[in-house]
Each structure stands twice: as structure tokens, then as C-alpha cells.
Image (cartoon, rainbow, N blue to C red; front, side, top):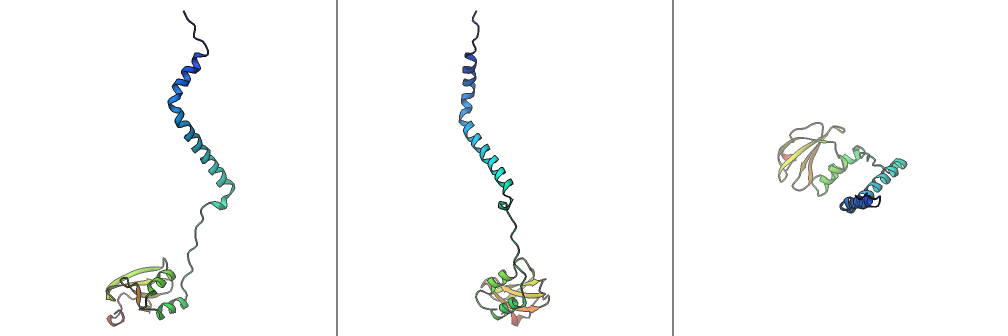
Length: 138
């Protein structure tokens, strides 16, 4: 009868772990990176994501700038920049190059008529206006 030796047990153990050895290095590397990232973020909180402040609301000067450039190329871009997140659609009506959208600014109590085909503002009026007169949105 043969007594199992202490040396034979590690060989058997190594044979059983051999198929897992290609997975150990990537797992150890991923764990090290994750722990390092958590430690880095906890010691440097200013590196975390911060919210970007919204642009200031449009002033009367910006509204007058859109009024002077209405019907010209680039006025639609000005409208989007000055009133980002402030415009709500009121309605659609014939005009411009087919249809125009009437957009209302709550903060400034102004309605704009916008032609998306040519990316231009075609009319501007104070107050909440669902439909502009047909001669103003040509």
C-alpha cells in the first residue's frame, strides 16, 4: 500500500487550476484599475462630472438683433442660441417656404415665426400669438 505524499497534492491542484490561468491576469488587472479609479475619484472630487450652467436668458438687445436679422440667413441659428430650452411651439401655419412654426418664449413674452426650410425667422411679435397674419409670414 502506497501512502500519498505531500508533493503529489500540489501537482493535482496545479493541474486543476491550469485552465483558469489565462483568466487570472485580466481579472487582476481589471480589479486593480477599478480600485485605483475609485481611490482616485474619492481623493479628487473636483474631477467628477459637473453640470454645465444654462446660458443666460435672452435680453431685449438679443430680441432686437433677431428682429433686425429676420428673413436673413443665420437668424434661425441666433434664435436657437439665444433661446436655448426656452421656446415652446404654439402652432404651424402656411408661410415661408411651405409652413412656419410659431415659437413662444415664456421668459420674454415674445412669439417668433420660424421657417425650418431656410432656417430663418420670418416674424416676431410681443405676447403669445398662435397665428400671425398671412402677409407677415411670407
